[in-house]
Length: 175
Length: 171
Image 1 (cartoon, helix red, strand yellow):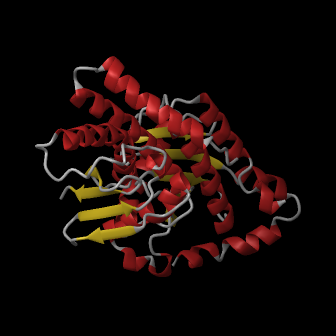
Image 2: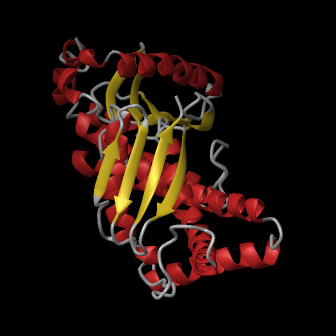
Image 3: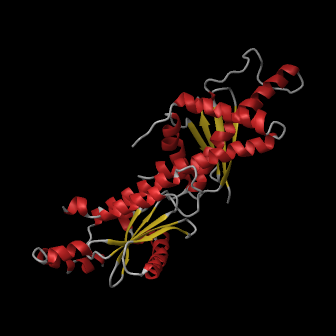
């Protein structure tokens, strides 16, 4: 029954989703574009979670569900696990992926320095690039949120990029 | 206490080898299956009887939801089967046995059967296949989460699963 999806197709689709929402449908309303992209991810995560949790016992607590996301869910999606999971034990989890698959083929100008100050124009350009990359992370954020909310854990997800193929997702569980 | 209620049924089974076997065959059937959402909203209720007792079966399914909640909130009762999706028999009525299953996503499946000495493995197998059918149904991009399942394909698959209930291992 296991039907597979071409990885390059998914990557192209993601790029196309982002570009059509950001430059086409909602060119001058970036917040709306973000919400739509996140919503698509939410539905995908919601449905995938249903499938991937089929043959396992129920989770007893939040940590177990997050661990499931880090290990099995991530492996199904990206063929690797989350590299680092941190938590403050008060409902915030940081999931770090050192080589996030959907960012692994993205590039920015390497001559530009990392954004230390926003004053100089080079850093501004870098910021623009970071923003564009950030748009591509709303989809995986939505996937995580969809999966967790289907497991009965309402949460808010944000993502940040440190240096390119690495990125981290911050999960804040709503009490 | 469940095994006690099963014990007297077993001799009758062996005794039914002769003319009774045909009757036994018809008796071994599922009368109702239901999918109930995480807010206890019915997503799919289907009865498989000719008689007009949908309301009664609906009522039985409704009653079983409390038992599911009880099982989940007092896990020490279930002992070693902690957090298993299959909840076992929820409660027997005079005519039916009600089995439950709770997915990770807090969706409940309820099975009502008239079979009095149904095998655990059969029920597990049924729920596993039913779960697969359910997952495929809700993965349909046109399915709205939390709304009733109206898919004809799902209904068809469910009726096939119901028909083959107990056949594979009994035959």
